Amino acid sequence: MVKICCIGAGYVGGPTMAVIALKCPSIEVAVVDISISRIAAWNSDQLPIYEPGLDDVVKSCRGKNLFFSTDVEKHVFEADIVFVSVNTPTKTQGLGAGKAADLTYWESAARMIADVSKSDKIVVEKSTVPVKTAEAIEKILTHNSKGIKFQILSNPEFLAEGTAIRDLFNPDRVLIGGRETPEGLKAVETLKSVYAQWVPEEQILTTNLWSAELSKLAANAFLAQRISSVNAMSALCEATGANVQQVSFAVGTDSRIGPKFLNASVGFGGSCFQKDILNLVYICECNGLPEVAEYWKQVIKINDYQKSRFVNRVVASMFNTVSNKKIAILGFAFKKDTGDTRETPAIDVCQGLLGDKANLSIFDPQVTEDQIQRDLSMNKFDWDHPIHLQPTSPTTVKKVSVVWDAYEATKDAHGICILTEWDEFKNLDYQRIYENMQKPAFVFDGRNIVDAEKLREIGFIVYSIGKPLDAWLKDMPAVA
Image 1: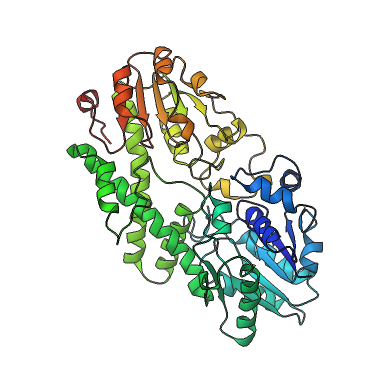
Image 2: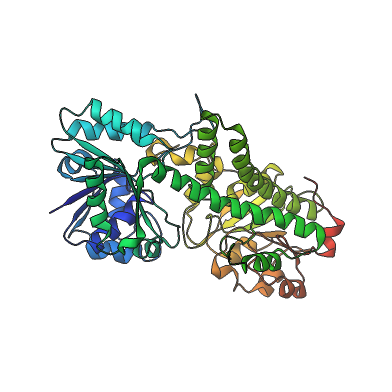
């Protein structure tokens, strides 16, 4: 029986391995992590991450050919294929701080693999890593190999949170990069045969190592660039009276462009987009390509601009101060159908409003109070370190309350900021909400999900990103 071990039981490792176990009943899959609480959660009825469909997949395989364990060394020792899916945070100090990837966890995983292995292994990069990481890992493994042969493959994930299980069942493509040597090609074929048990062969692409590593960064950079492009247009739409939804629909009907990733919003979030672009920027700078680095930096600059523009609009509309005013925050996750808050635009928006002394009441159907408090008190990039290395008890941010009901969040509020496009926010009883708010009552729709006209009829002053402004908002321009 082929044995697979995955180091790292997070958003990538857990779902990916669960689907491999489901689709390949003849393969034994072990997911290992040093976090006792995380492994305990994977072995419980309350999984550590929320992802539609994940529960069913895990429960149908767990204990049969899918195992979650803290005994990292045992499972690495037994495995034929070792996936490494550990955190690769952005460095916060030293060479490349603020841009380069911190490969500390990757390196310690590689050293441990070399240490415990007594048989040849295929080691697969699953985390998002900078180009040439495989080369570094290869050096660590070969210098510590004691005669054992390791083949390094790059198999980047292209999952979208909220649809990860669907993406794993029917991927657009599976990308496997390896050395173009007889041993490297054989390792590629071995991994390919795992995916081929459910993915059509023409959708399994094979490349050299560097192309696979760079393809992941490039894909995320292109997607983030589309979001920043439409968000840049949204600012121009507001200034000219155009409607960004009409513009992006017209643009998206061009078959060369297509309609996806053209929704204007308060900004992109998630664990990968910003991190991968910063990584790309750093690699370009290191390779003497400052113009290319500068080009990709603009994608992040526009994203930051969009978030601060939103905060400025909120404050300016409410008589230029939100001091001691209750503001309801609907949604904290970076997008709907996930509990993930990594790099969510809600953090910057909330911190901007808190900077103006607002009182925030936050509701998100999937995010816990502990997570929200942690996010609002953490330093930039801290979120990407394993949980046991993060502050244990987050300092409670004063002026922030977390509630479990949208009506409670909006009661007596002066304004509402919609920051995640949860479907339930479209269907709230806004008449009831309006009656229980301070007047004038404001709605700042950062996801363009509410019917602005209906809300105006109720009595709200509505700001929708990239849409013609209320007369009220025109009279109170937001100065950046």
